[in-house]
Length: 69
Image 1 (cartoon, helix red, strand yellow):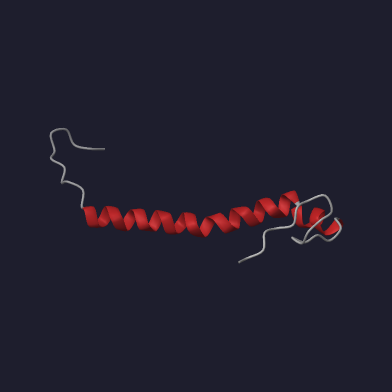
Image 2 (cartoon, rainbow, N blue to C red; image 1 turned 90 degrees about the vertical axis):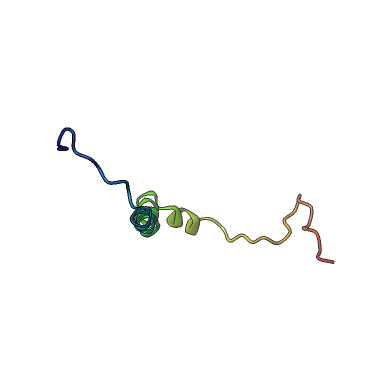
């Protein structure tokens, strides 16, 4: 609890940047774990495995992709 009337030092920009970098690193590392957990619970790969094979090649009823020049 702050002491009434006490003076606070201004925040150190270097420490603020270091803290922000640390928070960003934690979020970067947590995202794959969260996505893996959600993927495990939703079972999307099991659903995809049950579907017939597909590719990005031309399918009937669709225009073929443009050829590179």
